Length: 455
Image (cartoon, rainbow, N blue to C red):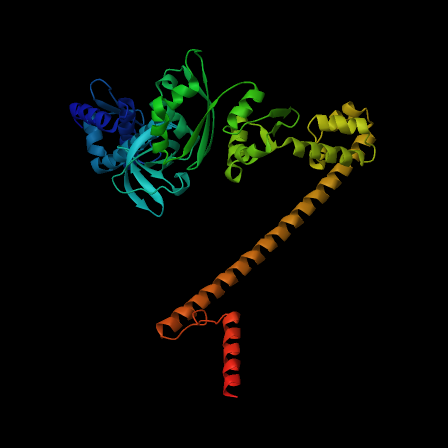
């Protein structure tokens, strides 16, 4: 093999495949060694090196030097070529793998090549990526040659290829879009602190500003909402709430529950639970459709948020105190203290640490074990009752649905019969005129009068 030809091949592969020259040289050397062992035997000790500057090939076989002529003569060119191609493909795969591994959770733009079985094949230029149905925003469909933006969520080696998985459901997509549309985020003036997302429906983004002169919420929304509108359009109309971040949970939780108005936030540190009190007219707004608003707020704040009115809280407190004091070994003072710490059910009490209960109530180990055991029994009973109630409700819902379906089918059958009779020219039961009672009475009186006159 001509040294200049070797250098030319290495340089071409380096530029076309974006593979480091050192890797190409090592691949050629490995190919030549593999081919040499097929000639000399697998047990033979063969070492072949290529000068990185001149391209000259030298080798050693069992301590005997091999000249370039020996290498060219004794090593099958076809075998060396096949091994070399394999090594280069592996090097190309590794280079692509490293490239896209660095792009994990970053935004990429591609063109849809195929859309089959709910999955889209997206061309990213040097590799074809997959956008699975599970990583697509609900309701979205794609067409050939359509441009799509997504984040890289997984990179795998599959034989001689690299398999890149894209996603449009991860919260990283929202982060990258915000960075593109809002310069203050890209510059680091505004920081995204947390994101809670339900793809295709709603997303909450908590932001803060390191510059007091910059309003983090206003900057993200933009003039007349133009900045956030671009993000919403890219996410197929997904609703986005911008939340002002605070380290104080008593401030962050009301912000996260907007647009609902919050009266008070009670933090139960031991459980990581926040009881949020709202007015009756704000209850459904705070909970949101199918619990979406409070669910996203809980994810954003990393706290378990319970929404209730003050009347509901007072009722729960009364029930909890009455239930706790009914336990053997529980005092009124300890019951009130437990409720003050956020224990509002037997289930809460069943998971308390024994040391904590001993310290709070000044109880002995035996008393604590007894209280916790009773709480576990009561919690199990309550769970079974709730399960039975849910079962009865499901059964009732099924019966009501079956009755509604039967009524609808009967009404449809009546309408069909009426239409058939009308088409046949016969009056249906519904279309036959019925004389009113007054008219019938008047007709009878007239007939009687006629009989009298004849008599």
